[in-house]
Length: 248
Length: 322
Image (cartoon, rainbow over all chains, first blue to last red; front, top):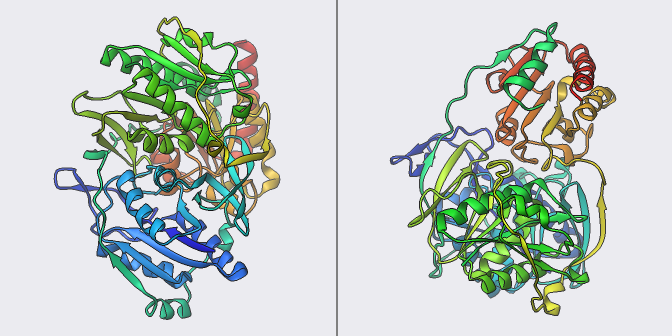
């Protein structure tokens, strides 16, 4: 089985968010970048398929040279090779088009992508990638078993989960729950050393449209001060929630 | 040229998010000077949509579409959009809508803006405000294509009454075998339990509760308020509560009207995930907890005393106001 894992290079969860260039660009100064958490669950599952079912695992990112350390981390976790499509990520469709070209040329059976990235929260790349490839698609995937060309997946739905059967080629949108948090792979010294020798190929992008574009960013308005209520005066809390906030 | 809106229903009932997207669709239709067509699946009675400005309802009655199926539903919505000549298609951000929207976008060659939090700010260029960086910022996004898809953030617009006819029409799109290559073989869903996505009120517990055995009072409070239960990341990582309750940056988003956080310090990642909720109440015995700088109301004190008392008083309050 040939697996392609899509990796997003995102600011870590504790990052302060600021903008530069008249609020048209995300300010990367002082920001630590990591593998998108939703992608990590997918990458760990891919490692399981590699170790237990002999799959090959390649990782891919659409971005400039600044994303290569993140791809190296994925190689250190155990991927066989990395591909960077040399163009900035502009919108979900443009990214999906670049990924689809590589996925199609590489004849991958299973393509894993985090269902949503921490930065732009688009949540659209896995689905668009599947549609462009004419592949089967399972979103919010919290379980996946593969036998030959057939797959059984578990999808998280509002209030529960569904079990689905399908076949390759398959794209899954991964998230927390696909593997246990405690089972997430982290790079060890050996992995990091080996990663240096693994191939990281840079390919040029294909021509594509960009259906959406961000014109400007905005920070949320500062919030008002908190109203503290005495623990002995819970009636006042209920009063405020009912009459002032009108939420009960 | 009507505005098309996908109004999900469950067991014949429209979800609150469906009424919200219908309300939003009506306001967009007013801007574009056109009408609203809603698409429903296997829904016998869509008359409730009359109150939210829907002019026409295209209902698809098909056993094969009884279970949600993203590929098939995307094909149906595509054909409905083509039939109506729609330039704008609106969906909610429910799990199913988020599953179908990207497929639909590719099929219609449409630009898709997700996490939209307001009406289009201008028509030409077509610009919408969206949340980004998990509610730490907003972006103003231009959609450059002829057909535009909007994914409306949960509880960002509210319900708005407008009178419409909701004239029902049966719609029979052509489906192929390829639409059904992902098959549902089992659905495991708690009935009669309000989900975090649909709840008006969410009651959430954190490490301050010291152990899973102390959750009884959290559940009582949630029951009294008809609220959904949630928890912080450490609590779900430690197995005290199920993964499905984890809310925060890497868990589920909360966009309810009221969020009550018990024994949760309010780390940035947690706040990011719950920031879209309208009113936040914090109960924590540490006055330095960061959450006190990010909430609307707070009570400093011992949750083990405060929560049961609050539940009692809420029961009295509800009895009085029944």
